[in-house]
Length: 121
Image (cartoon, rainbow, N blue to C red):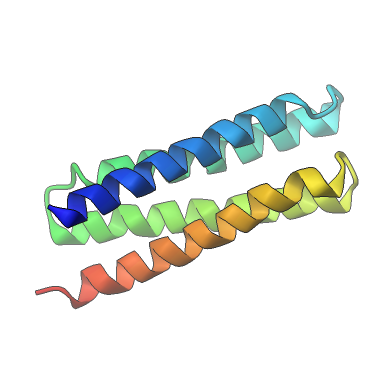
């Protein structure tokens, strides 16, 4: 049962991060470049939560791990888009800091979860 609590806690954490991402994206300028960056980052960022949810509906251990891999890849892609937005100065750098910090933590949790799942018999 503690595993279910951890799963729910992480799911809530992902949900909050995605919600924060949506508010962040909504505040970006409405120019051509920002619209395209917003679209890319929204897709990769929301995919983290979607793949996490799908993992728990997986039909096998292999599928479960595969969905976690997809979530981690989406998280890494999201880091790329956030870094690009920061580099081209589309928003104040401090607004990206909290999102990036939490995303780094999410990546570490996903990576550790993949290792743990692979080591389970």
